[in-house]
Image (cartoon, rainbow over all chains, first blue to last red; front, top):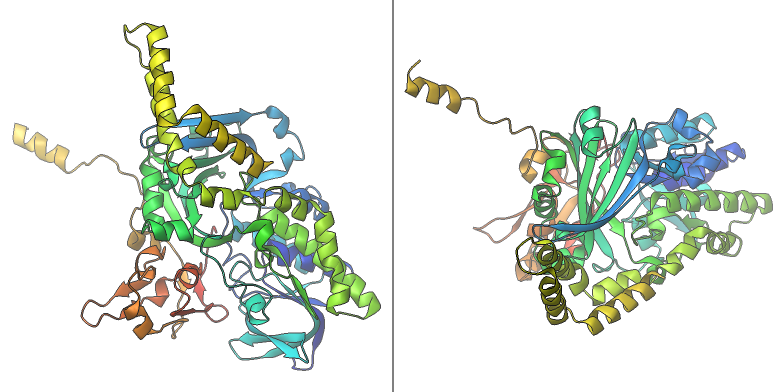
Length: 435
Length: 111
């Protein structure tokens, strides 16, 4: 590449946001290059493993016929673990067996993103792996290109789409985001555990290539503000835990110790027994949500995906789909800016408007109080699962004690341990945070 | 076969434990890296020493940071780094953590 070569748009990062933006731009004939610091697209990318595909389906209809997806999810589970028990909610429907499979798939990022990169490349986007963007080049207050490592090469462009992920150094460089707050950043670790396909299907009660997604709270993560997950792939299980860095710090926890604690729980251990650990990964998740979004626009720059803090950290755990949506909207904004030949913040500002009109900001707004709620009420995830499992254990314990007496005792214990008023208050507050 | 021989035979056939890994050390052997010659991490050792919490010693998912008991300084096993960025959020006043140079560092096969 010569120093004089100039792109209309440079995208930093070949993840769901950057690759979606690149595909849309390339299809519109915009000269676009995607710079990826990994040796291949996907090599730095980690997520728990469930991808919602409403946006992908529009970009690449019937992608599942070719893409390296693992299983379509027909079975959702949410559980609270106590130290030795579990109480939960379980949902299954075969309605999700039909195309478009409820737009919910288990995915292994390194494989999937590599495939999505091939689609962007086929559409005409240039993908440059092994190139790390170290800083944005600014001229009289506007972004005019990027500096890369190794080599210190400078690449020029009209506009940069930053899809660089959660650490968002570029946004920090130009002052678009605040310093990361440990209360709003989660650290997650995961293990991919290999097991034969039939064993997975038997253990999780699945038919051929159906999948299960299980979110687990409470003692799964030692009562911290976070959760564990178990997702089924074709021939492996993605299992992991995540919690805010603030909470991990407060309890002096190492994420892997929390993961091992989770793996040993009697609800989890039988599912992974005899498996083979294939890979271990760590990643941060920006969970600040609506109230902590950075400024996403400046002259010559748009932030997307995790770099823009676009994660729905409610029970939906939706990030990649929001990243793809923001990538598409950023690309559409750049196409309009190119028509006007104006890449100023004023023109690029339509990105923010598009985002607000889409499900992305609407969902983040809806769940904006979740993070604050659990930060302010740590007892709900820490204490309630143990108390509830104990009450249920008492209730289901078989003895010659008359059932009426058992009920009275369980109710008395409930009033003593939690109290009707406290429970109603907490449920009301939680309801408000989730509504 | 004598009783003792039976016992011995049973002793050398342990219950199949599978291939599940538990420690960070064992798990890092599963991860593919392309290791750079230079570290992408720097520590301000004086500020580290002055920090009573030293969160990076326990919170890092890859045990990248180890205390040198003799000097009180922080040793950096940068080649372990899984590139999550947690250290930066946990101890931003003395950790200078950047991405490794392009093409180097962790290479996830599953992700």
